[in-house]
Length: 151
Image (cartoon, rainbow, N blue to C red; front, side, top):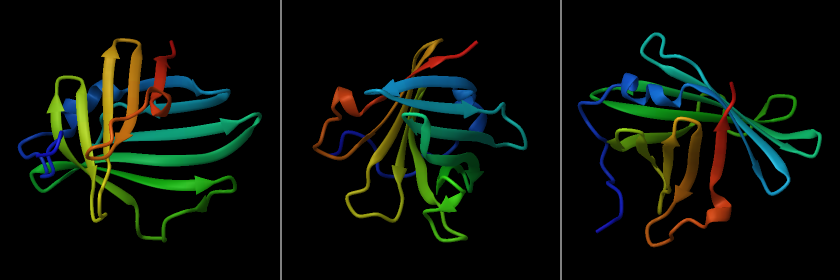
């Protein structure tokens, strides 16, 4: 048995993830990380991620959370500076929502052996934590993305 489900959660909507909304900033070691999430519009949430090493961007992500069938998908496109994409033109890294409890969401990467779960947890009104976890491999505190809401 796994720690988190491996099947898409049905009967949920993107509106139930509206708590992601906001501008979030944090640090990993001495590197700055940032996520910004839009309000719900058109049934979708849109996010942006940026990771800085020193004064330079290491990479970006464009993120969408959108309904699909009776569930919710999270899709990411990664870019190096200059918007040089990691994924092929029409492909994205895809995660299905498999668990949702209040402000704790678990997504499982699709079509990947030993796929990781991506967890978002709004720990308090001003503290968002995001991390990846694989079966049998608990996440290290140093691998967590810890953000503070910007006002």
